[in-house]
Image: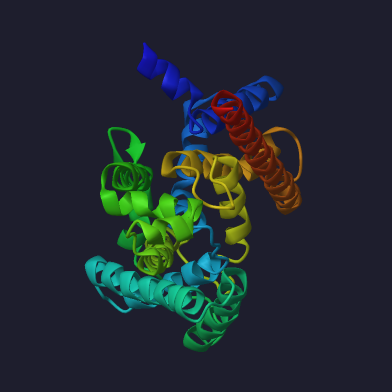
Length: 333
């Protein structure tokens, strides 16, 4: 019973409540939304967003940010499309995007950790450079004519559930266990909570932050393969603006932008909500063109709320420590 109470009080349960409420509201406004096909397709559409959220969650937990995930996805999707089109196997494609994504992440990590460049500036610069590389390797053209069997991967199902969604959920579970059960996984939150304290107790702060950016790049690469398979073509602007949706979803899912707080499960639920907005708007009778406007507005609201909650938490803890100190002095006196 106590375990159930703890689950219900956890940060992860809040975005789950929000997702259920969102679906209920849309269903009440437009009952046609309440069909197995619509709900499942809405969830399936969030698969690559979930993978992106896993990677950037590591970065945000350490107190940093990565706005280059969209461009990394675009580059890896372009490379994946070109290789698949030219006859390379899916395993080779996965290996290549793993290396490319991880390398971009490592460059970001070195810039932030070793060169001490602000993460927002470093990853913003990387975003621009990577976008330029995309135009160079694609010559500004769309990558098209992908094999039918590759495009059909996005339609595969297991027990009636889309295979990409299953893969995304499995990654969420694995990385959640890594963050909560493996000592090295616990380091990420510890670094984000108090990097100086983490260093004093022997946690490799710099190595942990570099690894966080590498994870962000790797998962962007993996998401790129899903993207290429689902769309069947890759435009030079692919992935543009994804970072706003992913960051908003992660914070909505309980990850604090100041670091040290949150979970992979929570961020995944948060991005499902954000990824569902375009479809939800259509069912509610609004234009999907409002998607970016609403996403931007939610990002501002979420960030401001997160900042206010952090200030309240710090103030409350400070008052508790002061009260305890006064009581202690009174007893000693």
